Length: 429
Image (cartoon, rainbow, N blue to C red; front, side):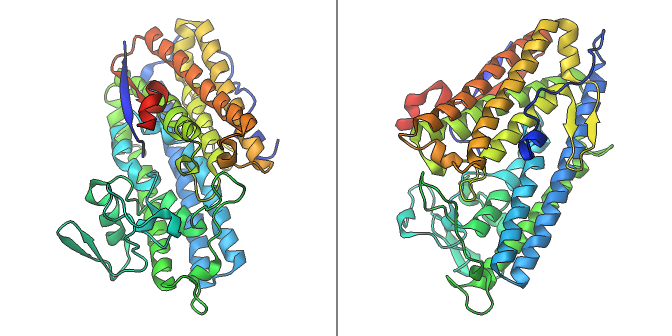
C-alpha cells in the first residue's frame, strides 16, 4: 500500500506481447460516444482482467499445492513461475482501484506492500529485532502458536484463512501483510539479501520438506502458503463477481455516467503519478533502497511496472488483450477526448505509448540481467537514468490526463500525489 500519499484536486517475446508499439484502435468516432457505452467497455475490461487474474491465481494455487506435496527444486521453480505468470493480468487492473471505492476497499487484501516480512517467517539478523511502529515486526507466525497484540493474545495454533485475515493490517499497521501476492512472494522466494547487487531471494524448497526440513516449522510454513493462495483465489473471485452484469462495482459505476468517466481518469492519473511514478519508483530511486521496490523478493518489479503502464493505456483506449490473446474493445475515453480535441487525443496516445516504451527499457534491461533493484542502486548512473526516464514519462502523461479532464469538463477528479514527487525533502526527514 502507498506511503506518504497526498491528494491534489483537479478543476519482441513478452515485450512484444506487452505492447511496446503504439496501440491502434481504428478510426476515431465522428461524434462522442455515449458515456454509458464508454463505461460499459470499462466494466467489460474489468470483468475480463479480473477473470484473467483469477485464472492465474488458480494456476498458482495448483503449483503451490504441488510444491507442498513434493518439495523440490523443480516444484519450487514451477511455483515461482506460476506467481510471475499470475502478475501481469492483475497489474493491468490496478487503475480500477482509484476512483472505484469497492475496488479500493478490497485492494489491500491482494496487493498490499511494502510488508514487514518478519510477521510471517524467519528473517536475517540484519532485519533487526523490533520496530517502534510495529509490535508484530518479528512475530514470526510460522514459528509461534501464540502472538501478543496489545492486550490481546492471538491464538495462532492453526494457520488458516481466518488467522491470516486477522493478521492483515493487525493493530492498524499497514505493513502487517499476511495475505495477497506479496505475502505469497515472500514465502516462495524469502528475503532478497543482495541489496542492490545481483540476485533475488533464495528460499530453499526444503523449507517445505517433510523430511530434512530447513529453518524449522515446515508444516506451518506450508499451511501459511496454502492459506494465502487459497485466499487470493477467493478474493479475486469476489472481484470478478463485482464486475459481472449485476455486480456491485458495475452497478455503482453505471449509476452516474459522468462520475463514472471521472473515475476512469482518476484511476489513470493516480496510478500514473502518485502510485507508480512516486511511491513505487521515485521513492526507491531517491533512497537507492531495494526495500522500496514493488516485487522486492522476486526481482519481478520491472514486469509489474510495465503492466501497470499498459493497463493505464488500456483504460484510455478502451482495449484490453486477454491472457488467451482475445481482445475486449469498445467505446472509449479516447473517443470522448477526440470528439472534443483531436490534437489532445493524439498527444494523450503519444504520452501513453512513451510511458510504456520508457518502462519497457527498464524491463528489457532487467530481462538482460540487470534487475530493477540494481538499476536504482547508488552510483549506477545509467540504471538511475533509465528509471528516471520512466518516472518522467509517467509524470508527463499525468499532465496530459489533467488536460483531458479539463477538456471533458469532468468534476470531482482527484489525482493522488506523493511526497517523493511533491516534497522530496520530506522523504529524508
